Amino acid sequence: MPEFEWGALGPGRKGRFALTVREGLTLPVLAVRGAQAGRTLLVSAGVHGDEYEGIQAIFDVFEALDPNGMHGSLITAPIANPPAFWNGTRTSPLDGGNLARVFPGGAEGGATEAIAWHFDRRLLALADFYLDLHSAGVKWLMPTLVGYHAGDPAAEAAAEAFGAPVVWRHTSIAPGRTVSAAAARGVSSLYVEGRGAGRIHPDDLAVYRDGILRLMGHLGITRGEAEPRPPRMRLAGGGNIDEGVLARQKGFLTPRVELLQHVTEGELLGTLHDEWGRTLGAYHAPRAGVVVLIHACPLVAADEPLFLITGLAG
Ligand SMILES: [Zn+2]
Image (tube, rainbow, N blue to C red):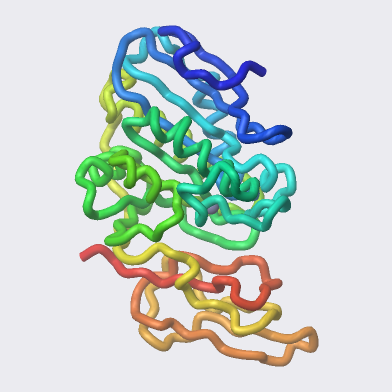
């Protein structure tokens, strides 16, 4: 596979490339340069190695696009964290790193930091707009949603255009993320979550795939206005799952709430059990709001996020 070199791909062409991070570690890059000049959309998936919806959506969109009809370009990194992807895990088996916590990374750091460093300098640097496709992975369950930072009107307009069933507005973005690296470059961004579970639900795939195409239309890269698709729920608040309700110890979790359920402060969210079925602890809502994340795999480790509650946009 040729080394990724954006200047080497001529107008009206598609190309598959490898972006070398270090010896034995490359990122696949699929790029489409429109016949006409315009904006460049960067899309990533697989930042966490057990989130598959975005990977399939990128593969599908890359096949479907006709560069001759495009005014602008699409650059994609469908598997942004190959060591984690091939290991089937959220984090990297090489250094335990979480690629969504180490940006902007470092060239001389561990494998995960080096990936971040190259992603930031060689891909994000090319982008006019950035979309990061996540999902709940094998352990969690999340609603299919698009999230954005409230301080960025371009991101808000793009989030509306994306067409996800739930839109989540954040007043802050935690450091170390792909989207915080984009913000540091002045690049507006969106991220997407889906139900996950290590599978690809066809409804989610359709949202991801349509969303990329709708976003390209919104940015003027493709022609044709998409039908408005208003969300059925708007959320507002923190989205950092590290600040959710964390497991105080390992155990077997029985959730007592459903996704997108409204809860009151102090309401029971779930109970943790030992291997004899005895209750180890009860977990309650730290605030009133909407359940936006559930640890759907019953086996939980100490300190893992079990639930996350956020607010409704008012
Ligand atoms: Zn993720």
